[in-house]
Figure: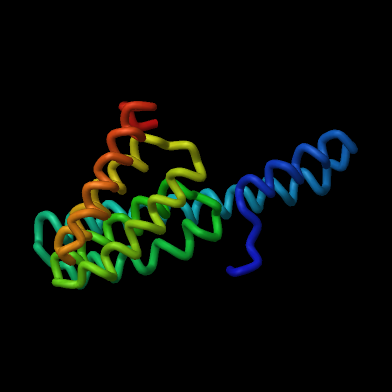
Length: 161
């Protein structure tokens, strides 16, 4: 699936085909959009199961496995918010397992995705996670800086989109 088009790319191609009145291309693009949608739906189902595995069953290993399955699907589909949620949740799992540095790496990647998509509320949430992970590594100054950044992000848009 590495060469699978993103939803955005499919939409742009469909717009071009529509302008050119290329109905065969439109039909093919519609089929591809349905396939991407089905894969993304499967990945979102895995996210729900991962939350149950972690929060209800306390099975971090199963949750990590489900997140690892969902991440490449969401990445291929261009679902930045879904992928950001996966990476943030993986960060929490690594924190629980005593790997704050790895947790911070996942939170930073999630933060980049949320900022890229303009979702300040989720960016603020990830910044607070990064601050927590830095505190666990005894980086108090970095943690304070991240909390200030989190406040600024949340002040821009306090309600998740």
